[in-house]
Amino acid sequence: MRKKLSIVCNLSLIMMLLIVSFFTVPVEAKGKTLGDLKAELEKKIAEYDNNKEQQEVTNEQIKQAEERVAEIQQIIEKNQMDIIKLEEEIIALNDEIKNKEAEIENLIKFYQMSEGSNTYLEYVFGASDFTDLIYRFAVAEQLLDYNDKLVEQFNKNIEDNKKKTEELNNQEVKLSNEQNNLEAELLKLGSSLSKFTDLATDIEEEIASQREAIKMYEEQYNCKDSDEISVCTTKKLPADTSFWRPIKTGHKTSEYGYRSYKLNGKVVSDFHTGIDLSTSPNSNVPIYASASGVVVSIVEKAKCGGNKIYIHHNINGKTYTTSYVHLRKILVSVGDVVTKDTQIAVMGGNPRIETWDECSTGTHLHFGVNTGLYLKDYSKWSSFVSHSINPRTIVNFPSGGSYFYDRTTKY
Image (cartoon, rainbow, N blue to C red):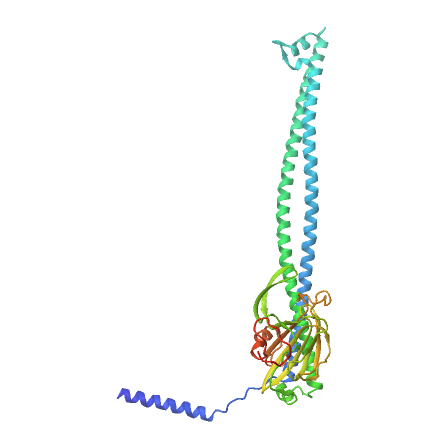
């Protein structure tokens, strides 16, 4: 009976869930609107302002630490001079004690016992009369007392100087430790400042790119704040069926993924978000759009990457973003519609020419492919990296570093 009741209860519960599911209206996920993108931009600007404040605070901390290090160095140098001076004084005092003792010994030979006779008593009792006796006794006592006090004072000075020298040495040790700690703190602050500066550069680039994108959505696509960007832009995003190689001839110099290489004499390890291409000769090499699309962002003279171009694509109904980095010259503008035949730039990356580009060791093109539309579906660098894919998966390149001699031959 209990088993039947349990079955009936379970069936009733299942029926209720089915009824609720049947009458529940699915909520359609709303895409990102232009207003959302503007709100993200404002948030990013606030993040940038906060970053700048952190830079100012860190700079002030570095300034104070550097001033204290310089102050300590001056104190240490003065202490070292004082120690040298005190050591010289100790030597002089020791010499003076010896000289004074010799002088007194010569002046009053009665100070010592000689050949079993007491010269001191001979001197005292050799007086001609009682007055002379008192005088000689007083003189002898004064000389002995003077000598004892003088030697005692000299010894005290020596002990004081030794104590002061020890104190100065201890102070120097403490100051040296503080100086070492401050220098270590300076390294940390410098590292933090570098991090803030690099982050600020990334945020600056993102802000500039988002402003360009918003302007393009408004002017080129007539998007309103309430419009979903995917709706108001996709209709005008030219369709294409495939990607071509972005240069006519060349070879691969660095693959997609984790890598280690030498940059400015240092070994650098990072995640490479694209594939590097180069050719020989490598001057004035034309760069082409890999597929039809719309230019959505242009970055000029970035600290890492130099001049850059980002293009949106619609390939067989799927959206992608291609990036072209280390450019000597940019030949397109934001909002331009491009095709595979459109030359968009000239290859750069030569550190002797593009001196502002600190992330390049030679002339080449960094070509990247990302899923989705950069600055619409995502905008942060971390998101950009997570949306990157190996260009080889959708663009045909010969294996290894073999040369290719056109943009379309299959390998």
